[in-house]
Length: 248
Image (cartoon, rainbow, N blue to C red; front, side, top):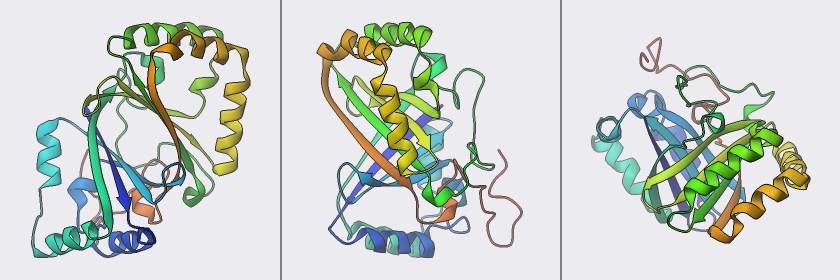
């Protein structure tokens, strides 16, 4: 199982045009192979400005390569050229689930959700938010961090509420941990974060590993402006003229 995280940084004022391009070119009819493994597209509302973060789940590197480069024709090339003209930067990294099974409720041992039916129930998928926590550690510090997390969870399970997953980078920045939590909306996301971090157990937990942290960053992300890129919260739309995007 392989996860890819992409992050696109846009020229000021161009992110709206990017979403229009998704409606025109990146529909389940145009790229069914790719969207069948799309966890979601998200736009930053707090954190680095003018960014879109997207997460995919693949079977393997070969699966990633096959899906990413399938269906490249003149129309697809036109999209790639037009889309890249809106951007200042593109980055990607490959991730794997972390070694603490409790921190991976969606893709842990024996669990493997794929787009099709929504994974989390929300009243309005267009209002749903993700909190993305990215933490870079000193080389060799991760085993102690996972042990500290296990001890923390034995005392307080608040970090498991609305948890999507916890991942470790293995291609890209090394010793990086990325964790995602979901909420119904922005206000609920901020309230949940404040509740978690006010708890004494959280303070004790962070004191165990903070000296090994090189850098940390938090983004508040809202779901995509197009419904078929909100797969955690929306059913997958079938391609035009078909009954399903792709059998799982």
